Length: 153
Image 1: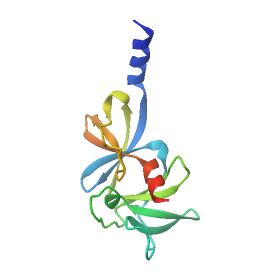
Image 2 (image 1 turned 45 degrees about the horizontal axis):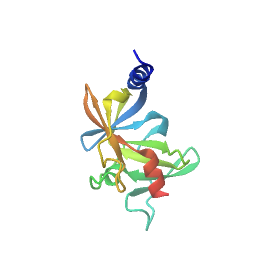
Image 3 (image 1 turned 90 degrees about the horizontal axis):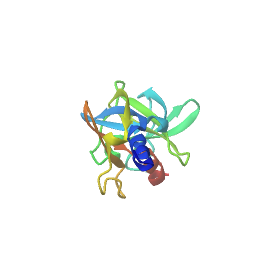
Image 4 (image 1 turned 30 degrees about the vertical axis):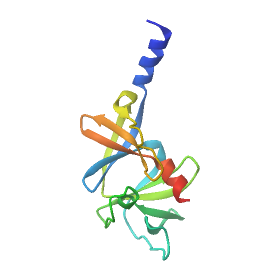
């Protein structure tokens, strides 16, 4: 076996943890390393004149965090969130902290490189989708937390 083939085989085995969540019945995923905390949806204060995709501001561990309507960010229209929902507190690689309101948390999954697909145009301007993953549970849509941070701060 050539050195090139060995490296290629090893690359297929590289895996990363992803956090799964539901939004309007669809399953999405973000890299676990992008999520600092998960909290129950609570008091969020609206911000007059704020971003169209933002729900408002929440005080979390003494820090004011901008909370986004994840459904609206993804072009799926407005969602209403309440006590049964969650906020994923995320941090982009540039250090931007924000919350993503989601319907339900589904767990954690290991994804290998050979399960991930990055269709042409999936990561274009205006979209926060990175790609998809084919899993035994079905197709997952991967969200780009860094792009959300870059485009909204």
